[in-house]
Length: 431
Image (cartoon, rainbow, N blue to C red; front, top):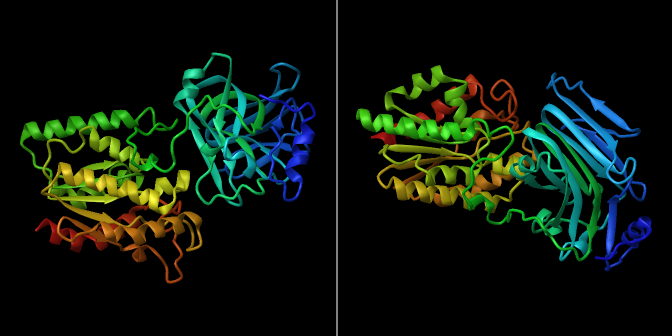
């Protein structure tokens, strides 16, 4: 593999207008930021420049116990590595910011490579992120591997740059070419970050085109402690009901919005649906592929409900910003699995609920594109589609925090609206 002796020459090659050739190696952080780039660190809302040897953030009003620290540490020479340490942080990051880089010549055969050292990760997770244009980010998760790497010293990783590219992404002027992101609590170091025009990957990544239909448990740092135990509890509950001869007439399948019926609003859940002996199969954070894994691993076995209510997909949008057709394929696959396992049940598919403050919110706009596709899945014999999103919104399309305080999850008022708008259709299907 070729290396450039003077890293600044690589950046110069990228800035030449109309240049179609890529420099063999484009360094980002090799001993120090290259070509005038700078290092930033922080949380989701605020990132500070790492001007000295160390920086600390511990004043996030949303997360009063969160601490994010960044430091220059030593790998092969003084200060040639970057260290990110965090605790109780929903999100932390250390990233490179540079003048606009044209990364298009690296997409076909290029790689992003770096050395990684995981010091502590028993309660955390990592991801690698590259911007793909204005307000466009792509990430590769590294949660389970990061925990396996803990305490094993430096490791060289190389990913195909195509791991961070979707169809239509514009890499012509990237200002944030790399970030190391952490969740939960952890401590990791990174060094020798560079692009290679003809590198050899040694790490795999999910295929964004098929990930929504590829069954997988939810492997996020914040879900590992409870996700699989919840699955086992649901399987045990199904066995208990079957043994006791209890019939389950109603099943809800979804993500945290469904999960919170049971977790945050148990009194309303019982008041509205207790007469159906309902089963709540909502799991916070779930995407279409996580729901598919659960369906394939017994969560519908041994029950015979009259109606299955399904509503999910917003986590495909929020975490990965999957294109609407990709999330649609995931929802379609999950419906097909329910149909196969519960052929007598009626499926009530709900539009993905609105999120964000107004109609221009990027995630809401993606969800609305998904919602426009969902009626195609309804045959009005076995599968029925219902969209009552307007009941959550003001006349101008705004979403009130009196209904969804975080502009995503309903509170009691929001759940009452859900029940009120859905109940007439549910009554018909139950009959």
